[in-house]
Length: 269
Image (cartoon, rainbow, N blue to C red; front, side):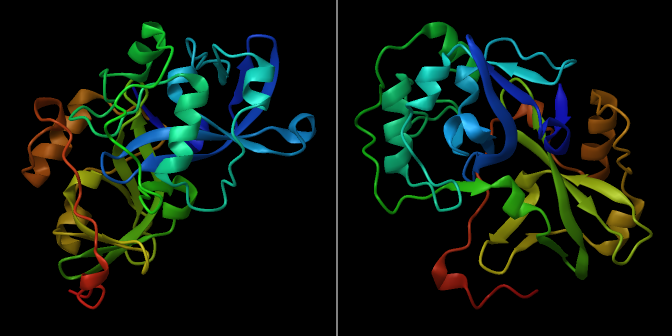
């Protein structure tokens, strides 16, 4: 099922023997567009620490109760590697986390989650130590981005600005980001539309811009997204047919081209 990250923010996170805290943010991989970690605000019990929790740690989510039960104890989470979530999370940090919890690496593999198609498959597998050790991390290898930071990024179309990112929509099994929710209120009556991150031609993280090969007219005529309604396959099919794009359920996950420092001067269309 597809879910809005705004709706998931604030969910309670519970260990097997007590409460951990609430979901405050999400870190996603800008290569595969998958949510790798939930940033959990722990409050006074952990000295106001924020900890990273992978979906691999989840038991069966209690969506109706807005809770994520973990297959972890309070002490296990409390003693996890300390990471400043306000700063870039390097691959070395991720290696420490995966080593501590005994989860396999997802990087260095063709699949989005490395050894499994879904985080739940890796949790059930019960790995005791990380695999994929040939994929040695680099200290300057940063691919994790804050979902909160992405909010407000400007969407630049083929003939001008078409709005800004208001939210992200994810698949609650794979935790892949399926859509950026675009608010067009700055120029077109507050219409909200969905755009797949795979349709982006380029993302300038420094300038906070996402470039798409879409005209303003196409956005005006595109299927509107109403947040109160569930995104079903009929809506998605109409959306993909409207833009003439191949449907993701018939394709593998493809990376979006990231702007390199050498292209910093070639952002404007």
